[in-house]
Length: 281
Image (cartoon, rainbow, N blue to C red; front, top):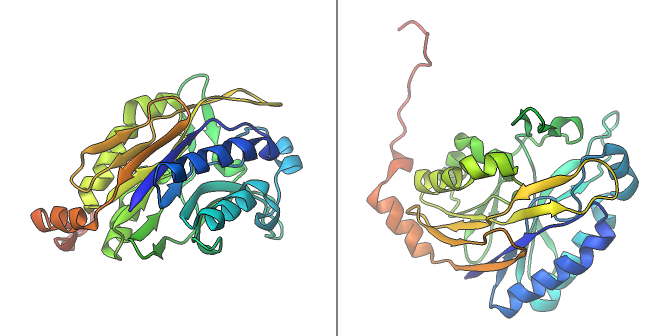
């Protein structure tokens, strides 16, 4: 299977993001991809919660998701909507879901994953994020079955929590998806290292489409992201790095490489029980 990793620089109006997302998907298909992955926040990047409530919708009415489903069916390919930000119907909680959606080649939705770990950090004196103020966390790991691989679905900040990836791999995942809109500061320091570590620990392919550059904003503060969409092989080598420009990069997946890496270092079978620190023996 050839995977096409899409790198985008979307703005804060979902309707304006439809055209560039369509162009990227068609470029991926033209390059031979049977599995196309878009980044986190494919439909909208904004730090302005009031603006988000004005322009975002429920899943059924999101124009970018509708486009992705139409394009998947049109081309007969698998598509991962890395994530879309959508309204939900939880009574008493008006926060959004940050949701990754796997779409089959008939345009149908195969699996959904809501981001578990939320980015509440201060990365510098001038750069602070409180994702939990606007996003309600998910509480369930998701393993999706496809004809070409078992996919463990995650999003961005999840990558700092290796137990999630180990659980997915031990449940059968062969490919881990990590769509992201990584901060430029943390991206420069940690992005590649974290992705390679998750591949090495699990013997999985890691596919990480990314947002990049300075994002067009009609309201609120300016947003920028790291870019460098990556595909990492099960042995830990980087197969492709998209750099910092929007576009599509490709990686050819062979599940025999997963079997080989795990046979060489079968760490997924070597777990041992242990008492936590500080507990008396």
